[in-house]
Image 1 (tube, one colour):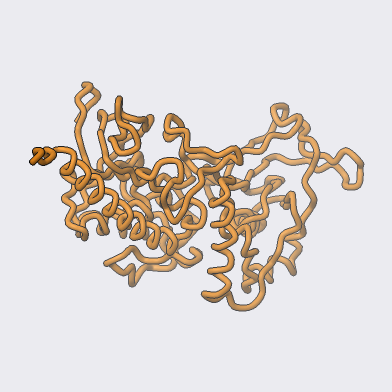
Image 2 (image 1 turned 45 degrees about the horizontal axis):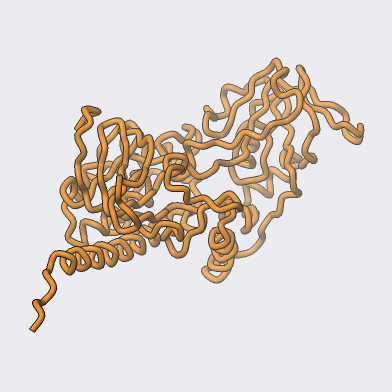
Length: 378
């Protein structure tokens, strides 16, 4: 299909072929759907692997926290010293081939809007770089990797050194002999610091809030409680927070060692960026000279293509019940908010497909009923 203007129909369009999108595609196929006929999977990435394919080389598979296998195929025997981008990319590739999911890539989705005269039970138009799809239901699985969050601080544009985000982190070697400020209190920030500290001239850790380190086991009960906190925000239509933001940072042996070495001694957030570093307005901390500012400040959901549907609430998020967008029941969001973890993405994919199949059955029955003529008067 190309940009010729032709419109192709599909019962379901899945946008994104990361963990959540592939889980949804798997369950659509299990429900009897035929790829490219009943449902289509679109992915903007150049190859299989979801966001994992863009991870930095030093993030080996053994360093990955909580990677859960996709439904129907276990990931076993992976070399823990091999880059996670290679391990998981190869796994996703095999998964797509073994289940015949036929992902369309690279395809950019530009907008999703209401078809003319569609109404709540009509079709949605998915406008893409390979043409337009008219669909009865949409499963959005676009994740967050394409929307790195860059905070703005006074003087940022004057900095003479290098600024980069986790999304462009190349691994520690490029920071050898440099003075590096790492901004962000999440798992990525601590991982970057522990790698860079071994080669940099100096590292500094700056966060808005005091980091919370979690000791002891993190079992199913704690996991459910953490997910429930994120889920409540989504129900209220607030911008979702990551699950890790409410679980704290795991205090493993590597983190203990880094804390003992002073690598994870945290500084409060600076007030300004200067041409040569960062500074605090009240003078409580001496200005820091830096060659690099690394923003490990997280990501936001990549949902701008859904803007024409006006799904956002005043709180800035899309209100979701289970996986269904409250403002439009044809739209399901997976890998969003509480389902942003790999295990959550699997469950959300299954749940979304169940809901979509009910929707398709209901709309088909309504369509048939509308075509049946009313009985003649006696």
